[in-house]
Image (cartoon, rainbow, N blue to C red; front, side, top):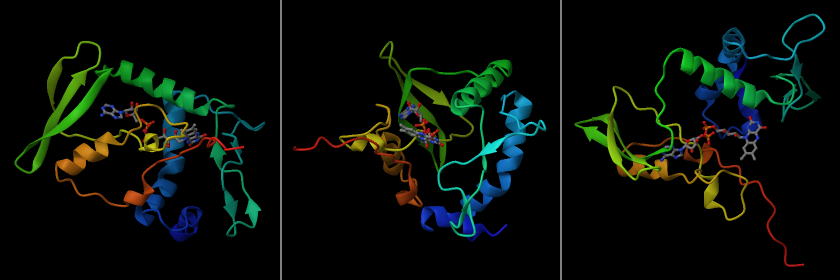
Length: 184
Ligand SMILES: Cc1cc2nc3c(=O)[nH]c(=O)nc-3n(C[C@H](O)[C@H](O)[C@H](O)COP(=O)(O)OP(=O)(O)OC[C@H]3O[C@@H](n4cnc5c(N)ncnc54)[C@H](O)[C@@H]3O)c2cc1C
């Protein structure tokens, strides 16, 4: 599989190594999700169905190809539900409605986060062996956007203030979908 072909969809702005990892790992991830219980749509032969999506093409855009595995038209929700079920099964603790305010560094490593409980206003320190930030993009910096209210990019700021280096900043997710009010 030639990784550069897959970078083409992003005009080669994406992290090519990350793209290659994602492309190579995708089939395994789909099977893993299926084994967890995601009810993917099927072909008549009983295989996982694939359909057209986004810019999926072959030969540098010459022909459309069906690459997207899906569960009817509610793929995102069923993946979310299945992963949530698995988390409950494995007794993962969720701190819902807790907002991360800062990272706590001990020497050179992140030892946890300070969170704000939105329901009670209480501040707590959550100690952690490892901290993975997955707080979405920063689409809310646009006035007109379809992004959720929490998509402010604040976590980029708190990581930056903690001296954590960034890479491929331009590839952060920010889909500013929306119609700008027109003057006419
Ligand atoms: C309208 C719209 C339609 C889309 N349609 C598609 C589509 O059809 N197919 C597709 O593949 N992609 C689609 N996308 C893009 C896709 O939704 C995003 O790329 C994806 O959700 C990003 O996932 P994520 O886990 O990085 O971040 P998110 O899903 O944004 O999750 C980030 C989470 O972090 C939380 N958070 C943020 N800051 C903090 C903080 N300080 N403390 C604690 N929690 C925090 C947020 O509340 C949120 O729950 C769409 C996006 C939009 C806006």
